[in-house]
Amino acid sequence: MVKTLSNQVLKINESAPSFRLKGVDGKIYSLEEFNPKCTLVVFICNHCPYVKARINDLTDLMDKFSTSELRVIGINSNDPNYQEEGFNNMIKFATKYALNFPYLIDDTQTVAKAYGAVCTPDPFLFDHQRRLIYHGKINDANEPEAIPKIPIMENNIRKALAGKTIEKDFDPSIGCSIKWKT
Image 1 (cartoon, rainbow, N blue to C red):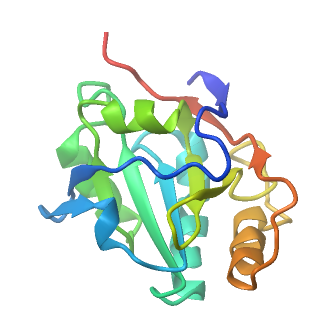
Image 2 (cartoon, rainbow, N blue to C red; image 1 turned 30 degrees about the vertical axis):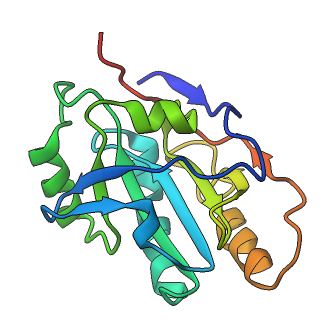
């Protein structure tokens, strides 16, 4: 595990890079088919203790908001040959954690590079026009074993839905480094 902070490559108000990726359900998904008020694209993986600690927070977000308000999209950009990664392990992960959002494979790693994602989890929140409004932490827990006290992402989604400005639009997330192909 290499602890990594997210970088700000994609800037606030920039458009979400497009993608067409295969989900664990076998379907091909594109960003354009989702039209909620907010879209949360989060780079996750199967083995990272930071992802495992926060995955229920992501599924809880989908339970707290309607699909017209929020859609979460999980993307795995790790080298598929890395231990516990790859499409078959993604299917197992999605089942184990009862993911209620699409979990997509970016096996070429081009989507992660387009977003500037470097760690897992690395969340990007977009408005209804798919412009970046927040990039950063899901909550205030900086270590996997920490108990979160402030639901940062939920609070920011609520602000966005209410038409309010998100004060801290970049708050680096912390997680394992994306496992790049060599």
